[in-house]
Amino acid sequence: QETAVHKERFLAAISHELRTPLNGIIGLAEGVIGGSCGQVGDKVKEHLNTIKQSGQRLHSLVNDILDANSLKNQSMQVKEEPTDIAAVCADVVETVQKKGRKPSVDLR
Image 1 (cartoon, rainbow, N blue to C red):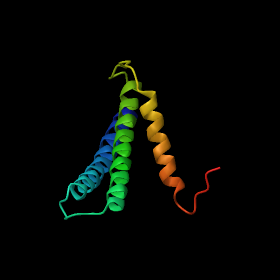
Image 2 (cartoon, rainbow, N blue to C red; image 1 turned 30 degrees about the vertical axis):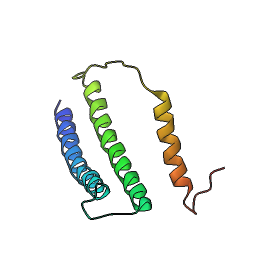
Image 3 (cartoon, rainbow, N blue to C red; image 1 turned 180 degrees about the vertical axis):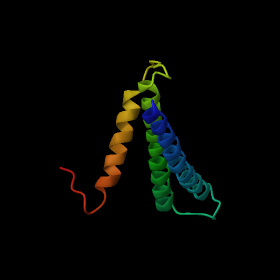
Image 4 (cartoon, helix red, strand yellow; image 1 turned 45 degrees about the horizontal axis):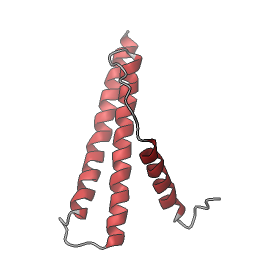
């Protein structure tokens, strides 16, 4: 029982320590995209959108880890709902394509 309490505290602390900077990164990227620093070129906007999307994915991952822990402790119930598989696949393809544009990555 004591171990479970320590685990809960650890997860709460880690989630806070991860969420705070992620929210900052996402917010700053959105601000620059929105023009808070003046006009930026399309290429810069593309990179900022990638940063924003990556931050949002990491934020979702932190939430998923906490949700998985809650499910394990039976303090949360699963609610099934339809998922747009095409949107999920498009997101994965977009991420892989962006990584594939780097000279050090060879997609074969």
